[in-house]
Image (cartoon, rainbow, N blue to C red; front, side, top):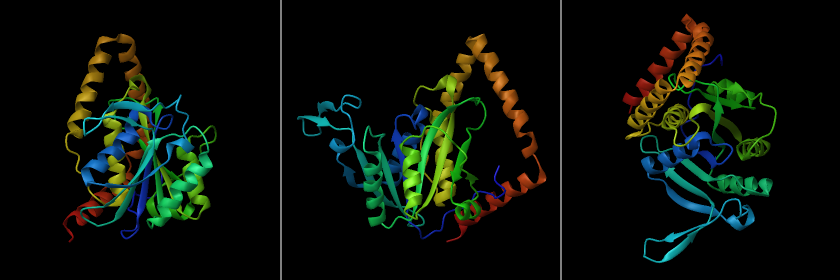
Length: 285
């Protein structure tokens, strides 16, 4: 665990949030979080990348259907860039939603970061979700990491210690840091035995962490009810299958044992400080 309580990014700093369908998006939790932000905050699309440059259309095929004017249209697998000024603080947030590209990843990242720089972005937050050995009955872990030591100290992040194959989320974060931008990554752990999307409990956990970083409340709508219904459904599944039920109990025991050291005075004090900070922001003008 980090030695610092989670903190906000500077209030006047534009920030880019990016999530991508595919390998980086277990349960579609990350992309659903960005879609929710787009709708809840009323973001406006300002740009998109040419899919011809980055996608193998035999891997990510275009979709044909009837458009809003009654004509048949083809929708191509692209990456969209939207912008919103958040309702309370007026912070500029750039939302990037796309499909992990099939080719030219460095050019793809360069184009995205050029757009971000043109919109005044200095901080890039990549958002992902991975399958993990976690129980659905406990809070969904969201790990926040960065290679930037100063940013880790300022915002209360973990160092990024992962080594191994990476996706576009990891490449974009690395390229942003190479440009001198502040770069951090959020990863939600989705229970691997219920990997099929949607995963509303994981989406909700990501949104709570984004609230902390951006310092802006997110209207949640029906998402908490969807998360509760999802958990009830998995509870029912575990109750009907003895093997799954026993496995969930093992995960619960392992999780609860691992969390015991956190039930300390220092951890409780950090959580209380976080509560006070959020309360003051909600009542302070």
